[in-house]
Image 1: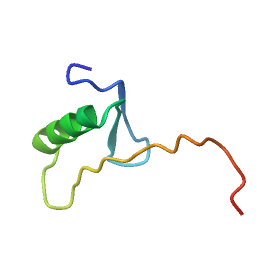
Image 2: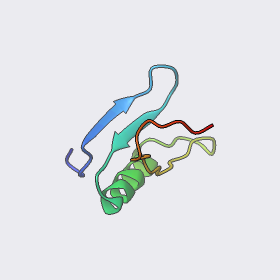
Image 3: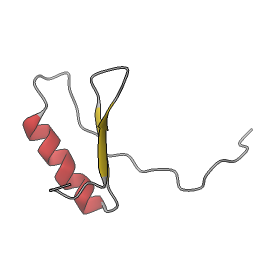
Image 4: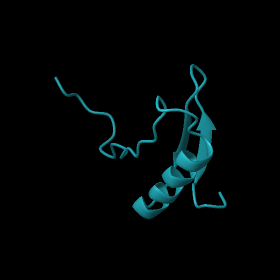
Length: 60
């Protein structure tokens, strides 16, 4: 929370960290921090995703 993330966690099925942010600027700050402190080789990556805010719906 010191860099602005609302919450963070670790995936239960793999070596994945995630953070929830309410502003794009905060997401970028978190992504930069994760890139600097957690990536150990060329196989890792940091990606900022947008949440789908439409909720559940029939699509097909």
